[in-house]
Length: 320
Image (cartoon, rainbow, N blue to C red; front, top):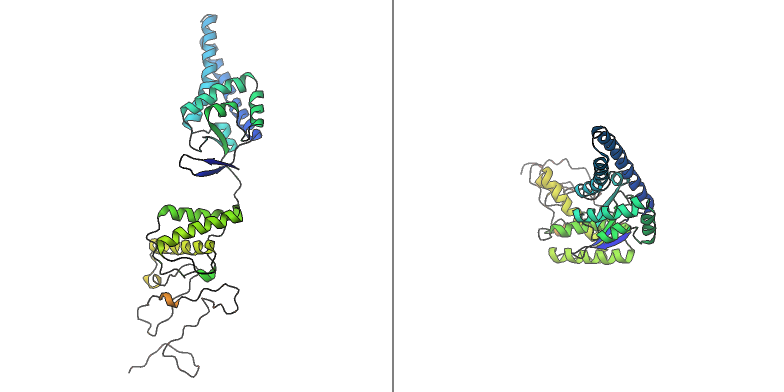
């Protein structure tokens, strides 16, 4: 893993391509270029048989330069660093800061590649790639570019769902002041927290939790890890977005009904409007392994008109 720093001081974790994958990509590119060069040469020889030797030689040199030098430069420029061989191997050429390359980068790489790849049969490029810490050849060094891997193994993501005992606790929280870039940072952290060093991940979670708490006015409850707090707040936002997008009934909107949340308590009248759950009605924050931790879905809904002799209530209220 290579950490690159952009102009905005953002650290990028990119996987530099090593010599085997780069060599395979170059071989595929050369095979295609040579095939095109041979086909064009055959057509050119057949069509210029009446010309003299000097003209045929000039045309052959022009075709060599255009097909084996100009075409790769044009392909890399138009595809933003992906030739046919690189697309097959899952590679891409980027700038040192992680941005897309431009024509000048492709031009420098192509011109130096004629010397270190074509004229020396790739010996100079192999030596430079082995010596470089990030596997760069001379063309990459002079052009300020880097070949990175686009297809990388998918690592196991960290948890994005909060613990069950935190679901619905922040249903009354005002999330309108949290900007979108902070939500994106929280989501990226939660999905990649398993790849981070524990101390670095904890420090990052504390910083993100402090930013979220400063904008919502609700800090993480005592004893709750910052990652769990972030997961619960993000889950609450996703629940509200899903409710807004799919038009869930407003009866559960105030109660923070979402995936895993408790249903609203039954009222005394079947036709009466459902009242939102007040923040004080949210159960106390207890870890799930506590002996007296109440289960959110196990609380019986008792009607206020239920008889005191233990018989089940039918929900029918006789007229006064």
